[in-house]
Length: 279
Image 1 (cartoon, rainbow, N blue to C red):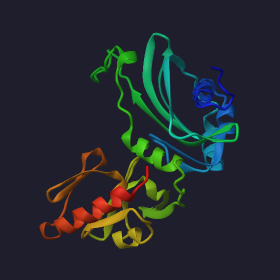
Image 2 (image 1 turned 45 degrees about the horizontal axis):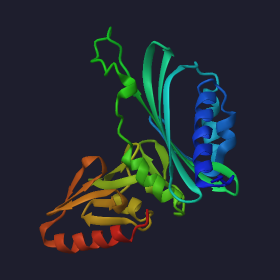
Image 3 (image 1 turned 180 degrees about the horizontal axis):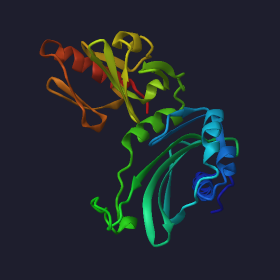
């Protein structure tokens, strides 16, 4: 049976090829294919970099990388996944090195695409590096068989991607003061808030901020999906993984206690909120 031009199989192949083409050009110093594929409201998250919202912000930030040294791609593998008839996810693993025999890092990437007609645009992207030490250093050496290493999928990214791509509204960032800087944080990336006296620890999927703002100030800027589980603790129910007797476990294994007198009510509230979420 012939396959139509706009079939799911065609779209899966297209986003996989687009991702590979973007990666190859990026590591050769050519950002053009990537920049041209960005949706105007896209989001970028990566290790060692700020979360960037909007194509213009991403282009401005990464323009400085076009003259960086160009590593060799030693190994690459991409897996496209269909989330809906118009939304697709590509996860990839790329091994990089100074030459074909000297691997230095494994790049894990995720790109979320949405089709508008016949055109695919990048709506979400996450990229992180797993650096590989060499035997002649004093640092313990990583597995030599790097091409067969199983690198875990970033679960926080998967949850966030699914929410973002399946027609969830993209919310505006909130301003959080930490030290002498103001960070613009997407509320969807916040896992939980923890009061620390007159300060607040803001734990996100890509960073932790020690804010000089009170927890009440920050929580007042957050939308639905956040829940005050106890005094001084506000959680994002999207990142609850387990509810146990008098405690909840969040993404990355953080456990937050629930006061005994309010446990039954809190558990019911959380279950109702979580089950109403659409991923």
